[in-house]
Amino acid sequence: MSTGTTIRDLRKEHRLSQTELAKAVHVSQATVTAWETGKAEPSSSALNTLASYFNVSADYLLGRKESENKTADLADKDTVFTYEGREIPPEDLEYMKRLLRGGKQ
Image (tube, rainbow, N blue to C red; front, side, top):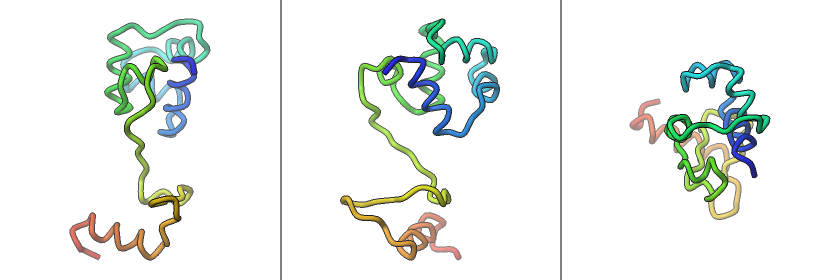
């Protein structure tokens, strides 16, 4: 996978527009477009900023390594959470949310 495709996929996973990503990493929207379409490659500084923003390694952005981290928001109703290959029942997800809130309801 190309660097631009990886950036685009991460941006979409985080539900960001190109403009929002550009603001977050201090570049223009045109620069993000150029990266995603393969017309330009991010500088090493931009790669590090993107990696930090998305919580991935620069190697992952460059397609050299699979992502070590996968994140999901427990509040996301469209995400199916699994453990050991089996779907986590909704009542167990609610229990996990209560635990993460410190047992507060």
